[in-house]
Length: 357
Image (cartoon, rainbow, N blue to C red; front, side, top):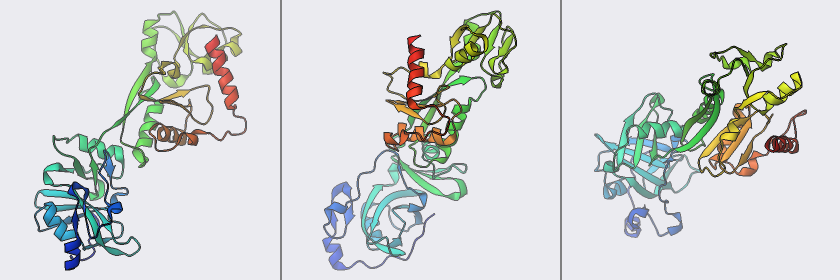
């Protein structure tokens, strides 16, 4: 809940006289305009949540009263924000300290970010308040007109705030079944542990094998692998078992499946393409994460789309999300190829061949 170092210390009369009110921009002792606490922005939160101190007070939660209480008061070196409670009311204040080198240091600048009418206190015992997405979702479940700051008391009784929560939508193009699809489930894992990512809404854009089979009736189907667990209205065989006999089947698979079929049987089958990458409209402004069987390792980011390998690991998915959402610069996308991996040039050649077919 944060540390309250010491009772309020008396403020020197000269400091009171010198104290300058700069509208909503904050209050400070002296005239250092460059140090003014900046405007809050959507999704702002305490990072880490230990930077927020929650304290009970006995004064009115107004700018005037809170300024008199806090200016010159010592706070813990890590404290950047204070949630001040009086009965059922809460106010949120940002502070700047004289020093971050001492264990406790006096407040030399403060800004009342939100008085009680602009604050909501939410009890959500299962929420990880250090995770932006979890924090935003808890806040949005209790969204109220006029509220700007949502203070969430979550797991382990820890508290954090989020300012005007807003979700960044990322579409995950993935093949089903199995359900939940692997890439979608792994992306949920990444969002749940990476505290640098913005609040994210994951939306599944499913390539459904059952729907494709229903839309394209056949006497026999060939699917890429047994892992899908698909049962259709007609006999099904799986390419990863390398059926001994080449049959008159309809392949529901990707470009890699076509290549394997040609290698195994010497020809190209009738095929319905399931490549998630082909579903991406280059003019679509939405962020997308897709997987591609022609990419063996590393990630590829272009425009609003990030591509990861079919067997992507959590690091690759995390890297793709961080670039898509602007947490990391695009230069971070360059993969380190392992021995035996295809080069980027070989990947481009494969895609060009596919496009020109």
